[in-house]
Length: 279
Figure 1 (tube, rainbow, N blue to C red):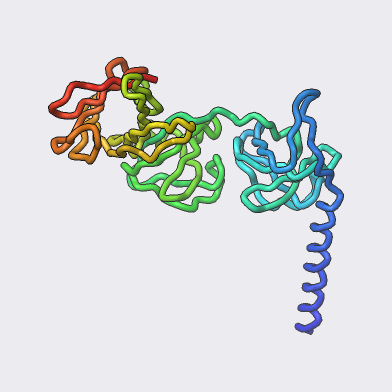
Figure 2 (cartoon, rainbow, N blue to C red):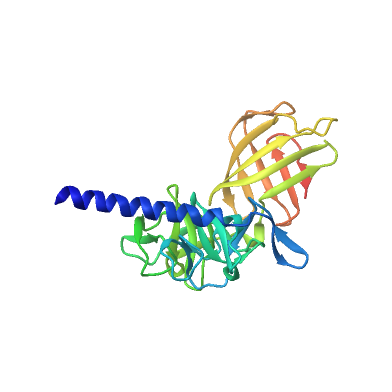
């Protein structure tokens, strides 16, 4: 009896597998025309839109088909083909299936709100969820006061965040955003006098990384002259310890100062006059 059940189950699984594979065989992989003058080709990204929380990735191109997984709002999928009945065949994190084309758009949503945030308004921890909904699975706990990164809008109530290598969703009311809108220094600057560039990126809410570099006559980027971490000491000043830099002796360190909060950065090695870099 047990053997018969085993073979029956195996036969059903083989049938389902063959059926699932056959669906993709009928997909048209030629470019899909979103509008008269816009199309996406095989391998191009598409983004989930026009839903409250998520859309279903299905085994076959039908609203009655079994759901493989839920794809959150604003998530990226890869176009694999057109089923011809309103469904597109896509890849989402290695899982292939079908999503209604009305929920997909070629334009990437601009949802980023901050590089960093802190977990607040909880006694112990906030829940990191698989979808932007209080009904979604919780797969991590984020301690009070912990830093989350790469924060973007998921919907009216949730942020999409990254924590400890995991991507998920946290209630907006539990995240205190770190912003420096008055003194936004991240980006690339250029010093005309030295023909030199600097890139400023954020490490965390209190430190930045500054890379100094030039370009060769061929247009190729030369190896960095220096890359140094600077710690924030007030609203527009970051300070470093000693660093090895060919043009200056920085045994005493240096400062990066944002003079106008937007477009001008001063690099001030201790004992030397400032060098100005502009966007």
